[in-house]
Length: 220
Ligand code: C5J
Image 1 (tube, rainbow, N blue to C red):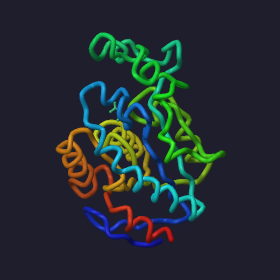
Image 2 (cartoon, rainbow, N blue to C red; image 1 turned 120 degrees about the horizontal axis):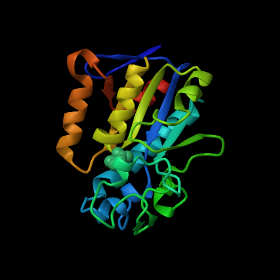
Image 3 (cartoon, protein in one colour; image 1 turned 135 degrees about the horizontal axis):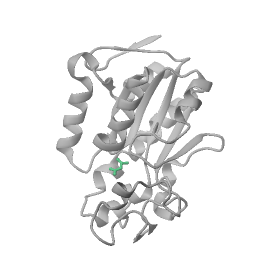
Image 4 (cartoon, helix red, strand yellow; image 1 turned 180 degrees about the vertical axis):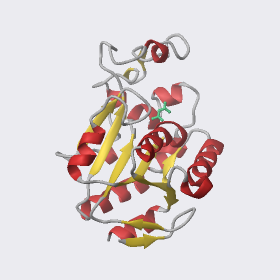
């Protein structure tokens, strides 16, 4: 165990039991000309974390610890998309509609791919998830149990949606959750600040937050 400076209090990182989960670093959320930008969002803050996420991934790989990647996307026939989710958004900007990088949030389309700078290595787990949380309708929990993981470090986008939802799912399943503060981002800066505060509130009610450097130091 190595204790790292974290908030709301130090986090005891278990090098033998920790894994990294990188949430939805997809072209459609991050790249200019993608779905996220077409909704009026400024994607630059999300792009800015790519080098930090890359460093975090490299640190886990170097330590021989699992890196799990997720992508929010749906089957081409949309059979895994609940009607309520399908009906969201303005006409022409709904899941499955033609978007700037192929059909919006559909598996296999260019926009659904992870940005090339963060490409998964062969053999790493890549989960296509139909929900905001990565445990919903995916084999994530089976993978974590098989790998003996009890602690999860988190990176990715967006902080208050898919990252937070997955952290809450993991927390309820008994995993210790540590969010890399500078390796996550939101289109709405105030939502990121609020989410970090919510996670740490009431004695780490959802988990801990720490800087990427501190996490990497503990892994080295
Ligand atoms: C994610 C979203 N990945 N904001 N999706 O957070 O819709």
